[in-house]
Image (cartoon, rainbow over all chains, first blue to last red; front, side, top):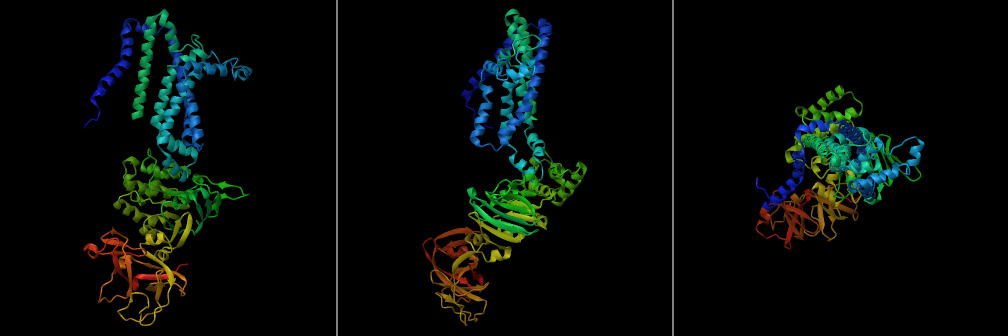
Amino acid sequence: MTSTLPRWAWPPALFGALFVLLPLAAVLVRVDPSTFLALISAPSSLSALRLSLVTAACSTVLCLLLGVPLALVLSRSRIPGPALSLLRALLLIPLVLPPVVGGLALLFTVGRQGLLGGPLQALGLQVAFSTAAVVLAQTFVALPFLVLTLEGALRSTGGGAERAAAALGARPTRVLLGVTLPGVLPALASGTVLSFARALGEFGATITVAGSLEGTTRTLPLEIYLLRETDPDAAVALSLLLVLVALVVILLAHRRARG
Amino acid sequence: MSLHVEAQVPERGLDLALDLPAGRTLALVGPNGAGKSSLLALLGGDLRPARGEVVLGGRVLTSVRPGGRTVQVPAHARRVATLGQEAHLIPHLTALGNVAFPLRARGVPRRDARARAHELLAEVGAADLAERRPGRLSGGQQQRVAIARALAADPELLLLDEPMSTLDVDAAAEIRALLPRFLEGRSAVVVTHDVLDAITMAHDVLVLEGGEVQDRGPTADLLARPRTAFAARFAGLALLHGRAGAAPTAGGVAEGAGAVDPTGVPGTDQDAALRLPTGELIQGRRSGDLREGDPALAALRPAAVTLAPSTGDRTAGTVLARTVTGLEPRGDLVRVRTADLEADLAPEAVAAGTLRPGSDVRLLVPRDAVTIYPAR
């Protein structure tokens, strides 16, 4: 097949690829294979990794519970156009907000002096600087990824088949489970993986609203940041670990999206 | 189930009322934008009227009236199934799964639903497609599966929205052959642009124009005696407006301009005449009560019209002098348009280049090809 790709696109494209891959290679060459396993299996490292995986998983579940209905409402409800556009724009704010600002916003919400601080305290709940705050921060930044991916897919497919299914006697819940969601399964999968990856890498919002308490709120990115000065070798080893986890996640998403 | 509709939808310019007896099929025809889709949406529950009601077999599906409680039964509970231009099969289910879907939605156990779906697929001649997904079915095959699926839903009202319009000629013919059998005994509304569909499927035809019912009647009746320009075009007839003229005198020669009757056959009480606004009198066959001077219509097949020969023709009819306004191909004939009359002539007649827009033509309208009937 004849390609219409102009030849001049190649050099900047290659440069772009290098731009992404070279820093990763830099991490790779900086890692000392003989000490890698020892460094990443240090108790503090393992605890950070465990915390990261657990909180990211919780955040992903939260994203699904909140994000799927949100995407459905944004794509299928009869809210008038302008109101819907505004709602969508507002919901996507965390996507463009600096994470630190997101963290501050959360602190002003659930912190002791925050908007919900009083009621939460009355219930005996201390959210800020707890593991729950980590999950909150991660969900806050990761939710738009799921909503955006899923809503796009919902918009481009399914309306006709859904109306047909309804006319054939299927109640809304059956239409949702039997027609709508199966139709957007690839997007749902990639949205889930994307939000998991975003939650796993969360740093700014986490450190602001949850702090950095070992075993409670110090996730892998925070641990790497702290080790960066005191133990650069360990920081690099953990960085590689995070890169590997990210790689696995991306490959999974890619395969799902195709299949 | 008998259907009663009464609806006003001002934003779509729709204001109509119609009744459909149980088990009858109604062909819904009209130009684009006439309100056909809006009417279907009203029946299916996608559109709520500003005022009106939809009652199907005694069940109130929609009711909006001042002071009354508003009722709008949701699509899934209306028992109104649609067969549209697109089959809209569920992409991730096999053909069998699609046909079983409405059964499962009604709570039929999986095994029974699949068995029934197999039967229905066999009935539409798609038994061998059971395990295929919609993506691997042709347009015609998808519509077959969609028909089986609509039947599985056992609807009380079936809406057909031009289900053949996106199919190629052969596939459309196959679906066309299937449909009458499935409409048998069901109440159905069929939107179509094709007169053949109306003839083969519908007991009655309803002409919708500008959101209002312009005409309605038994199919054969309406096609033979159309009352609107659209209905005439739908039936493939040319329609002339005028007033009932004096019945032709014995001997058959009417006094109208250009009337000829070289056969000399005496006129009968089947004969009638229509006085055109131009003053000309056109001869034809009577259908219905005509009183001289009353508004009347004449319908005729353009293909029956010929060029008037200068001499020696034995056909009884009327010669009308007209100016050609346009020519267009019409199958293997050429349609000659004039201000009020259309004629489908053999290509030889216009081949000599004598006929072109602006040229004068003398057309012979055979008496037997013209039906004259009251305008109301």
